[in-house]
Length: 409
Image 1 (cartoon, rainbow, N blue to C red):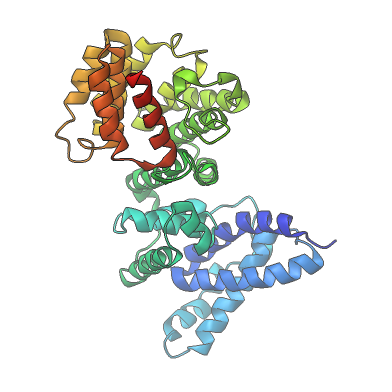
Image 2: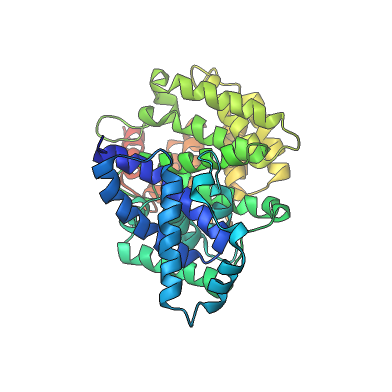
């Protein structure tokens, strides 16, 4: 049976990162392993389309990529003599594709390597989408709304740093230290998909879904971590609202106007279960708390029926264990709903001199909303105008214009 193109793409996108992870774990040379896997993928597209997908696609890719890797070393024997000799002296460690278990997964070590703290966040994100997500350079560029040349340079620079600095896959003891960087990168990717920083669309559903898919891989491989479970739950609960967040023309619909029947109930049930599991897994971290907050929001039929007291309490704990300007800003709305808008405004005003949020459109939008709740339309309009001047997302701009027009009437 020959393989159809869409099916091949799905299989290859899932198999390629795991084949790369297995080779990197064994041989360590990231750039050469990636080149070998890319050559194997080209051969797979030809052979699998003609002959069908093999029973063990990952093992097949590993076998072909290993041959390409060895061929490359033999062609450049002088430069790679040491690696070749090491390989020949250690046949017991050689990856045997016939013995590779399809349920084995080296994704986590590869993900941790891509998120090495010595790399810039931009490079971490691009390399993660390229190597773990299996996206092409063009797809990564489209996902991040930057030029393909820029992305290619970031990926090339990151791989060069990995090679020059001889970054190694972390030991088991190093995972906990590096895991936070991995979670931050995945959350950054998801947030850019959830609310795009620029462009005509409010959200990039494909990018958010890709971050969610990779996080599921991480959760499957490192399922005991409460923070991994918490991040996965947070993503699922947030992503479940995607269809209700925009109107037919792509206009932003705020939470208080959303048709909650358009939220995905099965995803909310899964996310809520995971959030509860995360809180029971031991020491509580920020992603577990954010997931719990998202679960409380998801349980309510409306903004008015939301348990704001519980949310405000969770934010108090979150601000104690992981204080940050964004957490403070998010907590202001919960405080306003429980103690009145003036209390919320006081919190937002504390961030006026913050280096990142002081002049950010999100702080200004929240401040405008709270002034509107307090019955001060002039101040609300002033802050909405300031926010409008600072956002680069068309859907957000249109929403802010609508609020400004409403206050003028």
